[in-house]
Length: 458
Ligand SMILES: Cc1cc2nc3c(=O)[nH]c(=O)nc-3n(C[C@H](O)[C@H](O)[C@H](O)COP(=O)(O)OP(=O)(O)OC[C@H]3O[C@@H](n4cnc5c(N)ncnc54)[C@H](O)[C@@H]3O)c2cc1C
Image (tube, rainbow, N blue to C red; front, side, top):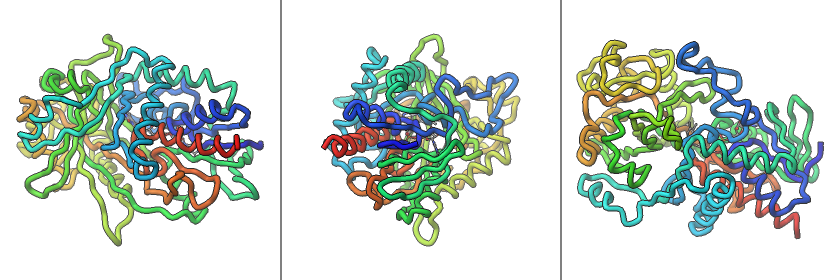
């Protein structure tokens, strides 16, 4: 099976590469090889009744398949260079923003029209944060919502499916450099491509490491973010969420001068399990559909951990902390803030009597047995700092779910074309370690597709 361009992974990075290649070079023969299934076939078996927690399916319906990790996400496209990745370091700040805006335009023309764009520009909240030792980061945020995000993906797939060959349930096992191109081996046969774009996301991190080592592509260790997901009554944060939808707020702890940040805020949303390489961690999302909204808002509080020589395996560190919570709780642990502060575990009865009703069925337990002291101290400090701008945040009944881990792939050494030392082999999206968001991953796909289309059309 011979193609002009092979794309590994059908997450936002892979999808937007394919979309842009079809648009710019319609004669190109393109195939997308994806480990998971079609969008319509993706269904997590957790139903809250018969199956309450993760049963560790062979292919995770949340992380793998058309739409990638973003398919059931909240669909928050942050247009900013302040967070979400370091794409701008490769392609420049202006170009990065232009591409994120371009992606937004495609989402709007494929079902996203009518969704709201929030912005921090000229926001009064910034001052209130500053006065309380908190920093509000600048961004414009398009909030599609889980439901509209799904519709957009469906529409893009319908547009692409006759122009691109999609191979689902086709994990790429290995990549070999071949004369004039790349040979991709799968259980369904070999694929040969002149060019190859790898976009395997976070779930493909281990595989990506293997490929880099086999092809002699240098990598650098990255950071890992560890923390908890907070769930509070939506009213407590509504001044922030009504105006900004998502406030990215950073706090520098007094004790250790560590940076703790809010991440992935979901007003009236739900807390969910996430499975990365068999380890269950916590995440969250929300729906645009008013009938699916809950009374709660959730967001993560994360502390970034960087390691210096000789330790390189930052993800391994995060995984082992998550494993500890899985060992104690059989999955995600939930604890009331009041119980954490009193040094006792939460029990099923205390959770039952809690005024904040959990949206995820997790095991009541004690997060202080899981999280390193320095990280936990930072989170507690930030909860009190947030309480000053959103009174009620530090209430006893505030729920903390753990652990939330943001794994970053090791950084693949890439040129300013996002090309490896092997010509024609590109690595984009979260799998490259360069991006860690929908907007940056999608923009990286458009960027590389433009370069490939330029060469093809020349
Ligand atoms: C629950 C949840 C909510 C989120 N919410 C947001 C949000 O609101 N805003 C935001 O900016 N980001 C969010 N994110 C993060 C966002 O989804 C990712 O940053 C984004 O999807 C990265 O895109 P990607 O294409 O690089 O990788 P992915 O989306 O991870 O896609 C990679 C694809 O490659 C496939 N793959 C892996 N290995 C192989 C292989 N060997 N062969 C073939 N295929 C392979 C995988 O199955 C997967 O489908 C969320 C993530 C989760 C899990």
